[in-house]
Length: 490
Image (cartoon, rainbow, N blue to C red):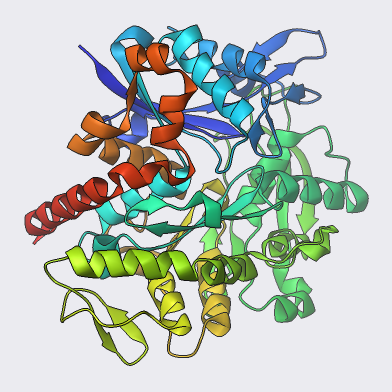
């Protein structure tokens, strides 16, 4: 029986599972290979399962967020798809996978050859994580106007970079994307440097640094105030002892006060392994906890001459003006329930279509749903700080709504899916896409079509403006599905 495999091919980890399976069964597989001190080569899940990660020399098929080493990716996928992990039979499997926006043609061609000629998948569809993440948001919140209209912004905080991309008609617009160099890798390396300079050398302890970052670091609501009260930031972290306790992880000492935006206090219990495993060697962090995530807002602190994530969203929105105008006119003219204006706020589905949107209204449309996705959005306090700064930067009277990321428990109860892990948003969106008739009928490329037409047919269906051919059908079917979901959940 043919099944659809949804594979979010991230530069740090692969998130893969068959459409329809529970999210808890999704495999998270390191997208890398490594060499041990004994010169043993580890690939994919072997890297995560290795009992003593100290001193591992690793290398990845991705460079600066782009897939450049196809031979290494082939080895990683061969291990991941094999009988020890996913148990996939490619000839009987349809594949939905992700790729970064604006890939060079040579990288696109190589990736397609790998999938069809090396593995022999039955069919293929490649899209950006932003498109799938927005579909996941729409599925979880079908009653929201922005979910129905399919318009908003997606901020993907990944390992290699942070990508900002507008979504129109439930499909991302890669040509309007903005990419920042700050991602999980940069933040982890910066934390490792600070800890090594001030406490103990952890440059060869990537797993411990990751645990430290995930358990102790957070985004300060007021960075200046947090830095002034550095004593309140102090928290201890016990380093792992791989010699005595293989597979152990570092643990934050319990409880850890983590002030969030607005002065709230959240308690972070010790992470990592249970039942011991610590080395007994603890280090105390203070300002490092907020300095590292601050790089998302002020990359210059890392020596990177770029603007921050809020400015990237505003810049992408400004560049989207003409595209949004065109899409909105088409939407209003074809919709049975056109749009209306109320002051500067754009509403859909209430009156007859009017003239072109002005500049402030373009911002209003895009800022009505800003989706935070990717593993980096697990940072506590990120959504609250991001929403405040984005509202301050947006034109007056433009409502800003930010969804996704880590949320306080009280807010999880208000929005369906708010508590879901943002790292799996693209995978969940791929599962939703797999159930659409338009995907099966118009979007995917079969192996026979590829062998007959080569890269040209993939280019027509996957990349840049390719989606224009089926965007109207995709948008219409998604809206129908959302109406069905809304009725079911009433």
